[in-house]
Length: 163
Image 1 (cartoon, rainbow, N blue to C red):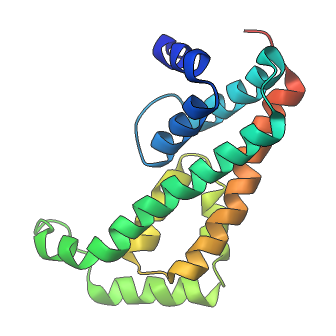
Image 2 (image 1 turned 180 degrees about the horizontal axis):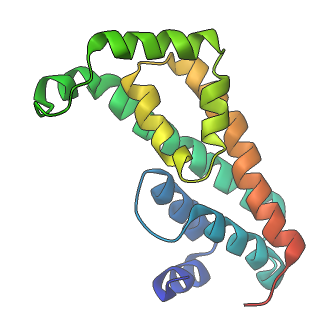
């Protein structure tokens, strides 16, 4: 893990944990999300941080980060369509067929993709461009945030590995 993240977390504790997960969910490049969440789980036992509070913070940060990117693309997709380069050929028929496909599966494909490493960070963009209903998308990201972030932090907490 980069030294600046370790220093930031050691100095600011819960606030640092929240912002590291938030900026990661908003697309900031850095170490893999799984590694960061495992580290936060390990950090709980090493520093005496509150396990329920860390789980709550990382879950809320995941939800806010994912939903922010989704909203940007949900409301900005029409504008993006007007400025897209000519070499990007994504016809409106294809977008409409993808919307129908997502609706037909009751969001299972979004749910599974949001729990898939690497792919999960692109789902807010895709859901926003496809104009998936905000309430529908919100339900999916709340459930997947609890499973994903809670699972990785819990794994780090249970493993209590030595660095």
